[in-house]
Length: 125
Image 1 (spheres, one colour):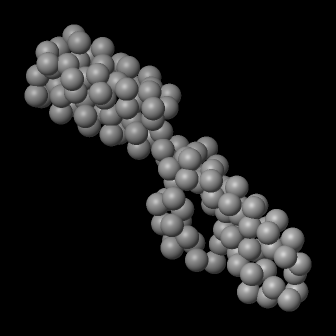
Image 2 (image 1 turned 120 degrees about the vertical axis):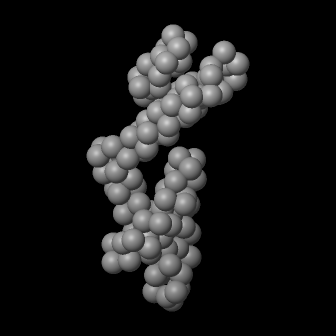
């Protein structure tokens, strides 16, 4: 592996966030001095690191907490909406705001697809 490719590999391994990793990927993919073999190795290393960043135990635990709360707020809103005679319009509106707030976190974290997959994998959650 060439020296500059080793430098990129070290940076990939040290990346603490996906955003940082993406910046490193852009840099090495634009670096015309990287040969094809090294480029392939760097791409695989970046994918491995991305997987690790997304799926370490703490991240999985946090996602589960977020997804459980999202589902609970959504279920509460749907239950209240189905029986409006049991709730005031203000109660229903407040619950809608709670659900929309947590859903906004899901969207901003770009986890909507993962949330949908989680719901399918955990139908009784």
